[in-house]
Image (cartoon, rainbow, N blue to C red; front, top):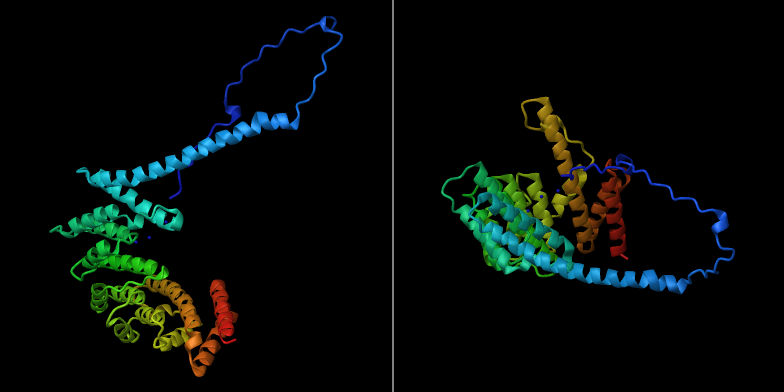
Length: 367
């Protein structure tokens, strides 16, 4: 579910080309010129318009129509050609086709309504899910196979044929799979659920909800974080109850994602997590509290944690802004008091700006 520069080409300048001598014309004696030259009328603007502009517009229109239908035809051919490549017995052709199809899916989704809606194309969904099933069924596992499974799992995250893709992604997220593939599968489910939620059609799939609740108990913190985030975007029995439990998880990022998930379900029960994040926002991460055998490693981990904390803070600011209208007076006053110094003094400009936006939204919601 991830962004090389083209090679520079050297174009020769006109000075690089060989110049050619142009023979001079033979001079004509002045005496041979006629005394009276005929009067020449300058061309009118209307004549120039007819001569150049109108034919130009016609040609441009013809080219535009040709390009439009050519583009539609070539795009249609492109995704079908990628599927043909994926069916090849040649491994290089097969993966070239899969890579091309994944790029087309992502680009098409970014076009929105102007795209071909390839994400809903059943033929593409069938080919990619069958490829992933074949890869998951391989008896032996090595680094190359895991890489292939991860790639196809991520590509499927750009598909919205829910009945086809969700079951195979849940299989890829099963604890018996490699942890990289499991994480990619849950990320893809989050992408799919997020698009559905954004379109006002939140996923309500009992198998999906049950699986996420079960997978959210994984010992791996990353799996729990991703499950918490995804459960905030789906409906289902047990989802909200599991999110409440996860607000007390040992992993801080899991707590935040669970609290944000509750917010998306219209619940203020994650507010204590948000208050803790806002209280700790001004505190720098101490490298000595990080795991690592050397100072360099601990420092790198501290810097990474600072980045993660900044991302969490931005998400928390959005969450408290959304929850503010349904907070009681005491909660609203406490949150606003914690957000104000972030808006005034925080070291990262974009977070200060985001905090100010949250304060304005809070003021507007109480008017």
